[in-house]
Amino acid sequence: MTRTPHDLFAKQHLQALLESLGTVTTSRKVTSETREVDLWFAPHDDAQERLAALGVLGQMVAQSCVIEPFRNSIQSQDVSSCVGKLIDLSEIFRRQAKRERKSLHESALPRLWILSPTVSKRVLQGFSAVPDPNWPEGFYVLPPQFRTALVAIHRLPVNEATLWLRLMGRNEVQRRAIAELLALPPDHPMKRKTMEHLAVLQMSLNVGQNLTTDERAIAMNLTPVYEKWRQETLEEGQQRGLEQGLEQGLEQGIQRERSLILRQLTRRIGPIAPTTETQIRSLSLIQLEELGEALLDFLVCRILRLGCGLLVRSYRSPNPTRSHS
Image (tube, rainbow, N blue to C red; front, side, top):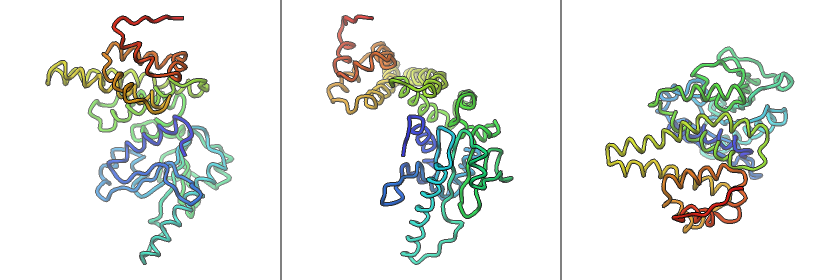
């Protein structure tokens, strides 16, 4: 079950990295009691070579697995809950194999990866989790029958092979990973999509009210990647404009800006009326920038709750009268 905006990012981030390599299911139900795993992944048969581009993450998902990312350090009850869901899911596969009269070797059952910023010694000792020489520092495996490993993100070595995991870390670990992401070549296959998910997370946090200290820190961490993503989005539209006509290219960049604003409005106040969506899609670049700034204003969030249509019409007016307090 998705717990916070960061948890949603973690699921979207992992889904984007893996969706071309296998079957990805988020919030997969595992029992009649509606218990869900955060992310289920089954690699395609022909994806093994491409998985190498994801470094350590690619090695983790080389076989069917469950991934459970946590924003805060895991506690014993978190591990127990995740392991319980893995057992339930494994039973589903066993029953299916029995119905189909197929043999199912234990090695074919899914593994569980629990991602956490840190893992305490008490938790490690409680589950007899120990370092595995086959994995980098920060990986702790439970006894074999559990098919489970705890990944302490802040203990991972700093290199490109662990980048996609460290982006889900906290504080300085996440800041450094973001800087490494921005330094990747522009044509890196996963860079742009990851930047977009981080930018959406930043927007989601900045339009929120009563942010926690941790959420404010995340928003600050994400500011550079949001600004870079927004700049590249507009520049991409402008570059295409040089090839297909400047006006058309600018519209492509602006359209992405409109779509992002619409997503954030929907996230904050629910479904938007078709007439209001039409009004937003007709705004100019300057008006979109003003509306985007307003979305980041804590006070304007209250106005949005009273009616998005009123706000949009004020930006559409040729000579809008706006008061500032």
